[in-house]
Length: 314
Image 1 (cartoon, rainbow, N blue to C red):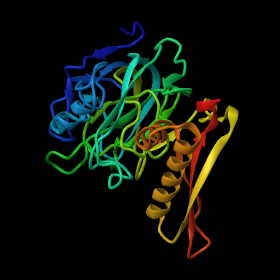
Image 2 (cartoon, rainbow, N blue to C red; image 1 turned 45 degrees about the vertical axis):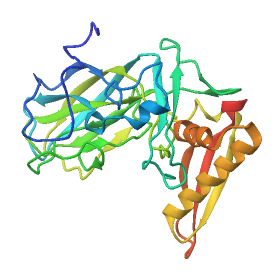
Image 3 (cartoon, helix red, strand yellow; image 1 turned 180 degrees about the horizontal axis):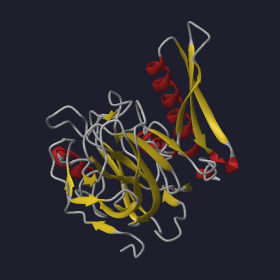
Image 4 (tube, helix red, strand yellow; image 1 turned 180 degrees about the vertical axis):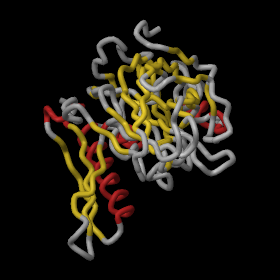
């Protein structure tokens, strides 16, 4: 438990979806620091002994729970919620899965697969993946947001203008996130914690890992904000940059096709050079490789690049 926190919200106080009518589990004054106990994105359905068979029985009605919501006193539509992310307390256990029907290459990877990660939560030393692979870790919260103005229950799965399932791997400790407020009290929730992820989360899952998160919630009154923005305290890829990158590209008139092609070519490269199975290479790309739009002005063709950090096999 955080001794410097004003409140703790336990894992049992979670919800699925966004709804302006959800009853808050806490009413907090602006400036409060809150300790959130978060579940992993499966809602605890996977453990250290899980296998691919367990992926086939995943209960999607329990997927992506978030802890909360918190009613911030004085928050009104037209204000901004300032979320200062203070600290993550990882569990030491995580998983990455290929879930049939989900992911950038779902048409090519139709069979279930899962990799269980074990890591040292106090040091966050790189976690092992297959023979010779070591993935640097960087904990963050994949889902963080507030309630929407529209009434009714809204799915937890897509990202939204008020946050939600953003899966931005740079929402780590030290970052300040700003969210537009659309309902009284904001109704803030957080969850879907990850130990590591590449930009794009290409197979649909990262290193999904249960953690606790400490954040401070504050208000910026009467400030227009159309969608989330955030500020980082320093470099965002220093944990990956040291040994350089292997990069593959997709070139053509469609960005989605370019993204798929750059990823497919990286999977081919990893299987050829490191002896990985295609599905293992796919999952590994999801947790530490980055999709980037390299060029989007020289019509009619655009360039999407896939960056894979060489430090993983250094």
